[in-house]
Structure formats: C-alpha cells, structure tokens
Image: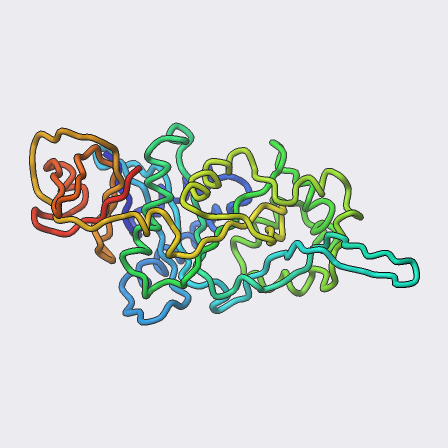
Length: 338
C-alpha cells in the first residue's frame, strides 16, 4: 500500500533520486542535495508553525510504499506566491491599436512580464515514478494535497494556481525559450531552469524585457508553444482539470506552459469530500474506490482504498488502512471519490 505523508529529513537520498528523474522544467525539484535539504527543513518548519493567515509556508509531501519504504513520488504546496520574493508570469493579452482615419481597430496578442498571480496558493513539484503514471497513485499524489488544503483552510489563500510544464524536445530544447529568454539570458533552456530552481526569481526581472513581446513577431514554433503542455505533464494537467481547474491568460516565463487556476470553493476534492468516523472491519464489501485522509497537520496521511461509502456518519476501514493512516477506530477521516 502507498501513502502520502509529509517529507522527512531521512527522505533526502531518495528525494535526490526523484529530482534526477524529474521532468525538465520542474524547477521546484532541482538535483542539488543542499537545496533539497533546505526544502525539507523549510517544509518541516511549516508543518510545525502556528499559522493564522497564509504566508511563505511550504508543504512538501512524498508518496511512499509502506512495505518497501520506496518513495514513488512527491508533490508540494506553497501557501502564498510572492511572499518573500517576486512571482513572475507572462500575461497573454491582446494589445489594442486603432486608427480613426483609416477606420481600423486591431488587437495584437502580446506577452507582458507581470506579478499578477502573487498572493495565491501554488501547487508545484508533482513527480511520480514512470511505472505509476495514470494510476490511482497519481491521483493520490496530486489530489491529496487538495484534501490537505480542505482540512486546513486558514493556511491557504482563497484561490489556487499551478504552472504546467511547457513543451520541450527530447533533447531539452524549448522553442519558446530559444525565441524569447535566450536573447536576454544567453543560457540554454535546461541551465536557465536549473538556475531558477536554485535561486530566487528576482534575476528574471533584472534581465527579462519590461515591454510587451508581440506574439506574431515570434517564430511559428515558439508561438505554437504558448499554452502548450509537455506530453509528460499532460497527466498533471488532466487531473487538475477534472478537479475544476481552468486555464487563464498567464503562461510560464521559461517555456510558455499554461497556468491553471481554481477557487478553493469550486475544487472537487474539497467541495465534494465528506468527513466520517473510521470504524474497523476486516472484510469490506467495497462499492467504490476513494481517496482517504486524516485531517491532521504534521502527521497528515492519505491513501487510496476500496470502500463502501453511503450516507451514514461512519466508514469501515480494514486494519491495514487504519495503520497506513496512523489512526484508530473512532477517529475522523476525510473521504473523496476517486
């Protein structure tokens, strides 16, 4: 059985391996042991902190095989974007021009550097073993974060965003970066992403153009990348789209990948989850598959389980499910349909 839980410092060696295997463009998971150690310690401090309003907290989760101890994936929540450092995006909106003499009005798509998405909760760092792609474990890794937000709403903003990795070729070339960022940074795409993962994004503001970039002036290959999802990022996109997330007019500054957003009140795993009392039963006549979590903070746990869930106030769990959730009979659980 696999369970999602908060990261621990003892996870560092396996977490570095996950970083090495992660998709190019996942800047929140750099292959640097010192940086990963800092991320783990920051996450541990966030889970322990007394929070009245969301700030710069970072909640880092790992997906663990409870029998082997192997880490099969990781995912993350940043409580508030732009807290402590700027959060930059490219706004994709038409630039309107008009000639009254010629009776012509025209709108040209343009990309503008902005900080419009500051102050929102950010999902990032989604990575799962290739063998578990498009399985219930992928749903667990992504959606259990949302159940955690639902259990602790004061720690998060009213809306949630995520940046989906944009298109790049198998050899790590990004047509969007080559047409835009390359001219201002003089760095290959992979190196620019690596630096962003290790440093603050402040250096972007120092080098990126402060004036709109007119989309029709970009090469066709770069234009085709705007809002385009990398094939290996499609699952992350699809899961959150089913949760009620939608695309907006913002794209990633490096590869042009899309940004998804949703109001917390409209997110499926929050709005449609229900609280119940856990009861123990060795044999369960399951009628469906569910995500199940406890509502704890530092000891948060979530699993996938085949259960019988009806309108009653209690739900029966097998002994191994109770153990995986680190709860006892009579404790509260949160349940959401898979």
